[in-house]
Length: 224
Image 1 (cartoon, helix red, strand yellow):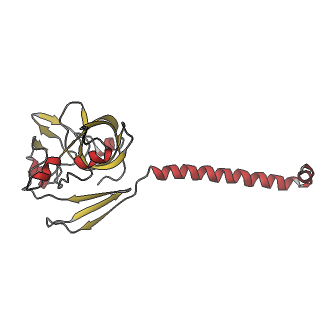
Image 2: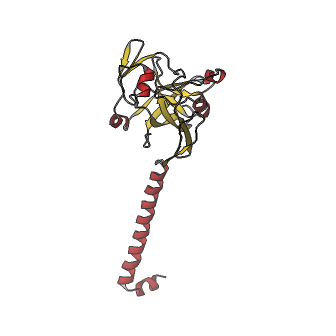
Image 3: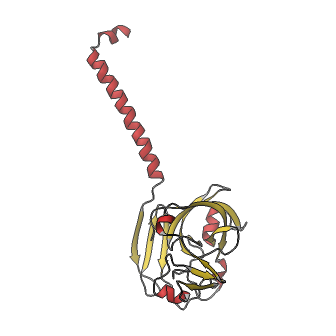
């Protein structure tokens, strides 16, 4: 074998080395691309018919699907403790579409949401809770703080400072389960909690029965 190698002209040896190195570079590039794909979420949306007369938006974010319907203004808010939004009554602010990052007041305290730019870099760990399961037992539906119909078993969340709406990835740090949620409501207004999940989201993350969990919340691209 050694004699065979000696008989190979040096130019061919250089060519073999080049091919070997090139293959290694291609493989390394593939690994990096593969990793990027795993952390990039394709976002698509389309309009469908709604039972309430308005169009229903269907969002697909990665493997998750979100139904977005404008709630009738006659429906009560999930957070009836919100006193004003942008200096207006909550329903009027919703009607005028002045909700996304407008300051709002709850029990005399003024909250100022972060800008869209600030939200794009948001990453925080803390305690999550859940809400809304009781609305199944009520005749009329409820609307979120940005006027969307609230689905207790859907994949949504409430946050005090993120613009509405914003998509986030939430990881349960106690069991490593993770899902993507649409933040479309305000809250939780309880000290020590950073996010309130719909009952359905809490079930998927495995803390519905427990009530709370330590989570990591990160915004992702695909703001609605």
